[in-house]
Length: 263
Figure: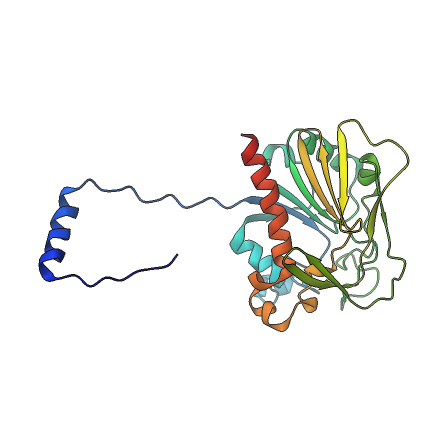
């Protein structure tokens, strides 16, 4: 917030001090609480690529640029399972190219959203995230999104871009612009979705917004844009200036505002 300075005479300064002494103290403003976000991902965001237990314990691994920003902006927790989702009840659940989820986790997620939860899903049909890890290493990012059972339950299908060899795609949403490597599409399927699900697509089927029971889901057919390698050099040092980072922020804010307006 802007600060203002004003020169006052000694007499006025003394008067101000006396007034402040006699006036009741104003309670300090309470800091705004950060949104509680839980993250499930196969991307090397939390510890970086090629992280091992030794490198983590020795401090040789560090989070990706966007995760460091999320740590400042949100009360964020990385998960391996959704078994405590209903008990923890975060403000936002973020699925960023997660690993294959077992039927129990999918059922928990669907029930939680229907009860009023908010989920942001980034699912990429053809992820292009370089990794130094050998093929078959479980720590490598998942190449293709594996959320078909959930998406199909909600009446959607993730499809790959017709031109997968495109090196870069420029995306723009309002005043937000960023670059990614290829994009997928989310298409409605002919079968009827589960009851209580209504979805609306935008940006050439790149983003789909769904109401699921009492909750909401934002589904994006890409995850490569989280990789700082696609950001301008200046924003790698200052993630809040990145259009990709602000895009995720806008989805979080949209869900938070929607929940607040219903209370």
